[in-house]
Image (cartoon, rainbow, N blue to C red; front, side, top):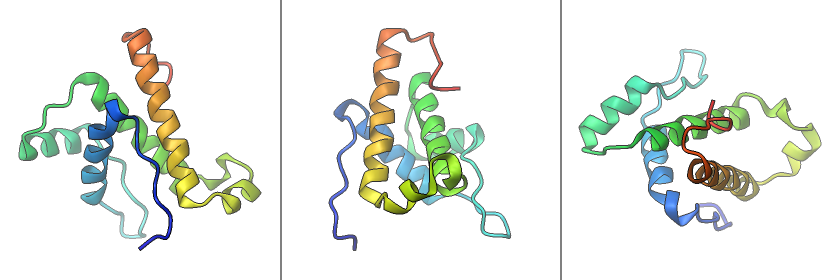
Length: 118
């Protein structure tokens, strides 16, 4: 068990974070141990099996969270190595939740703009 308490996601997107955790738990891995992305097909199958009905914005948030996941797991050089080494998991989650909040705010400001989501 970690000795830190992860920060909560933005209240309006807490359900999407829970959905992402469910999808991540069923993530497929390559033979070399590298994770596969969560595909639209994975989301559709998960939604059908669980009775969930994510709207298009929520699907975009799920996909963006998956991109953040890969930024952290597969591309640690996206930020200077000394910062990666200094960031604990709590800090990484806070960063992801700030991105979630920005996505949410962007969606409210202009639902047709997908600058952060593509």
